[in-house]
Amino acid sequence: MPQPLLKINEIFYSIQGEGRHTGMPAVFVRLSGCSMGCPWCDTKYAQAAFTEMSPTQIVAQVQKYPCKNIIITGGEPTEQDLLPLLQTLKQNGYQIHLETNGYKDTDVSLFDFITVSPKRYVSPQMLQKADVIKLVVGQETDLDDLQNYFAYHNQKTQIYLQPESNKQENIDLCVKIIKQNPFLRLSLQTHKMANIR
Ligand code: SF4
Image (cartoon, rainbow, N blue to C red; front, side, top):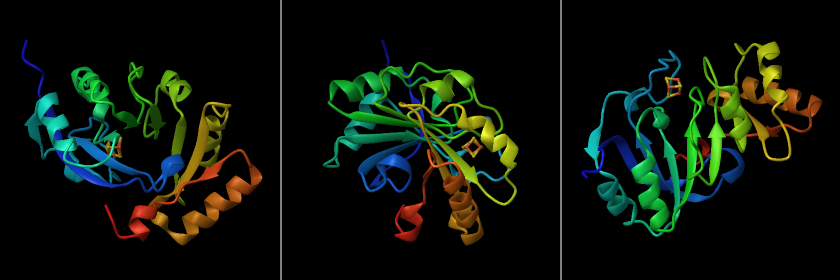
């Protein structure tokens, strides 16, 4: 049976700049498209531009790099049929991380690490499955809404606050909230500071 083609925006080798795995080398597989349509989206370039690739072609591409960590991101990767790609990556010994907005309850059994970054809507089931819930915080953030996520913190699930655009006023706000709620963690976009992708 022919493998389903996936719409891939880009595949590149870099270093994870955010969250619990900050500093970890990884191959990023960015899938194209996201139906959420957030006006502030910082990956708008990934919405329409894509190359159709089979799982075999994607794995051949990632095998060019000396790294067994894969970060599946987007756009919103769960809007495409990832299963054949995940199975092929696993057969080749890869650790697979997922970055998702979590709006759709998804089978995550083949992922080794799941980061859910809620946007306009998020599935409560996905919040429960997350290893990390990453909340982007800016001056416009409704702090009451933010606190609704705090109940999902437990031994498995950590909550990171990420200052929007690394702006100092947003960093200050995150630090203040974290000091008031010390189970929270700070996520800076260190790849932007390092001027890498
Ligand atoms: S959910 Fe994420 S990828 Fe989708 S439009 Fe919003 S910010 Fe962009």
